[in-house]
Amino acid sequence: MARQLYQRDSAAFHLNATRRHIRLARQQKGAEGFADAIQPFFLDLQEKQKLTVQANQQREDTYDDIMYADQALDDAIRTTYETCKQYDRNHPGEALVLKIFPNGTFSEIVNMPYAEEPLAADRIAVSIENLGEKHPVYSLVADLRAKIAGVNATLEAYKQNLTHLTHAQVAEEASKASLRQQYEFNYLDARKQLGTTYAERIFPQLSVRSKTTTEEEAATATSATK
Image 1 (cartoon, rainbow, N blue to C red):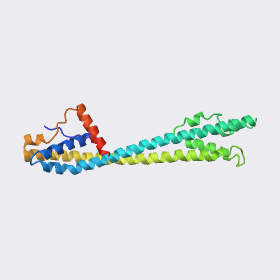
Image 2: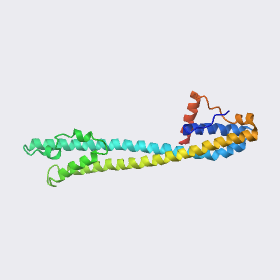
Image 3: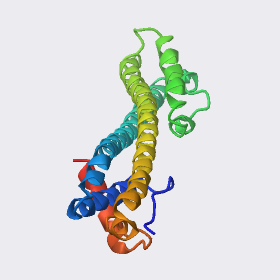
Image 4: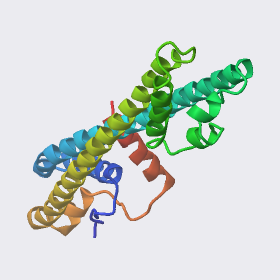
């Protein structure tokens, strides 16, 4: 008996099994209709898988953007600290570093979780602004604000891309279910119309998970993204 598709099977496995079934059905006289019946479901899952892959790539890209923006903010904070420290050397007794960095260091800020660092950096910017526009270190505010905005923008984009990915995954699962159901319908109908022997011939052997099968699934997944 031909192995059926299961919910736990990946989209790539569904696509590979169906591709092979369509190919076999088109070779068997009188079975072409089964290929036609399942083709729309196959194409739909191909498209849904493609959208999931794209959404995941966008999520990965935005995560990379967060890392990049966070590092840029880290550098701006370090520059601010070093500038304040230099100012204190030139103006003994003013203790500017402690006014801007109450703990006397920047390390706890640059090591914060990405989502928390912009707020801590904003406190630094506000502390500098309170010194007044004429203060020598006031010019640091503009760069700090720009870097803070950069991190916040990438964090927001990441949240949106996570939502898009979730929606794509849900749509892919629904498409898998529809394809899986039609695959079963094809098998049952083929047994009625063609008889067991000929019906079995138009379904691929899926029970053995060989290296070749895995490679075929990967190739199917790759082609679906083009």
